[in-house]
Image (cartoon, each protein chain N blue to C red):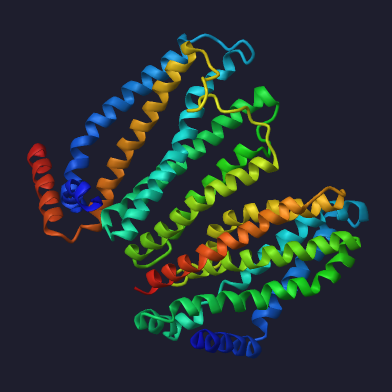
Length: 258
Length: 221
């Protein structure tokens, strides 16, 4: 049953097809990402009301929460790609791991940085050894570990496989780390939006936040397409189709110059 | 089972011949522990307060470093390649490696723990809890370090890379092991933390050997 359900995905395991698919998706994703990010952030930063307790400084939520959510979302998608890549030996999925990892690491760094900037006025300090901050920091270390491991082998394909395994080990460990540090120490405010309860935020603040979250997701998707395209080109550079593609690109730029 | 016993015998024989493999980490452990009083100050009250964290950080560093060269020789001499190509015996090899690694690094830490208690001024009760956390925690340290060694076996850069990928995975262990010791020091119940440590151990025992086997295959294949 599973086999036939995902049969339509099979062509995209071919690097060339996936390269062109990413190329087609990229402009739409990028335009939508820029549009939603601008909309969400301008609405949130300029037009939504100030918080009754935190004043204007709460507005960093429109960057902090989306980047924190998608730093974890990127890790899960990286781990799913790693799992697909290892179990079914699909190379493009393994390359996707390498494509997502640095984006996720940057999202994590953004979440940590904005969190520190938010912590300064609210808690009076840039950093506290609080559960959520710590697990986000550990997440950054896990990303850096995956990136470092993938680059440590003279044979790049082997490095990616080993790094994929580490990504899967990390995703098993993440909940354990999360709950360990939660039990250890917590100061962070509770989640603003959860699936299980009414959001503890006014709709006038919630809407720009949701749009920003969507914007960060679209940006993640767009950047993944972009990076995956270059990964495919790097790993397939000896194939005829890449040669043809690069030759035709070179020809057209030459014509423009003439 | 016959194969497993033979592999364990081989490992123990190798450890008997290369005593530095298990003596050096032990000396390293004691050395790191004696650095802290020199750096922080020798007041007994303060030492007692930070002892749980110190012992556990020193333990996880020494176990981690001892695993670095665990597979290098077998990889160089083609043992692992043979086991991977042989399609059986790799799992026995992995479990034998893990067992012997724990016997050669975790057990010595437990054995020198009375000495640690004297050095850091721990009382009878705290020492007992330290022994229990070491008994429950060091097998997990061994399992994860072996995983790190397996992942980086064929890598060009060893050492610090292995620490980089494995240290984040140690965090839960560090929290609960030193948590149990702190609770015991302030006469609070600590069975909860010990139960969590036991859960980590069982969970890691079930999954890590499989991941190690896979990592070895990838490094060879």
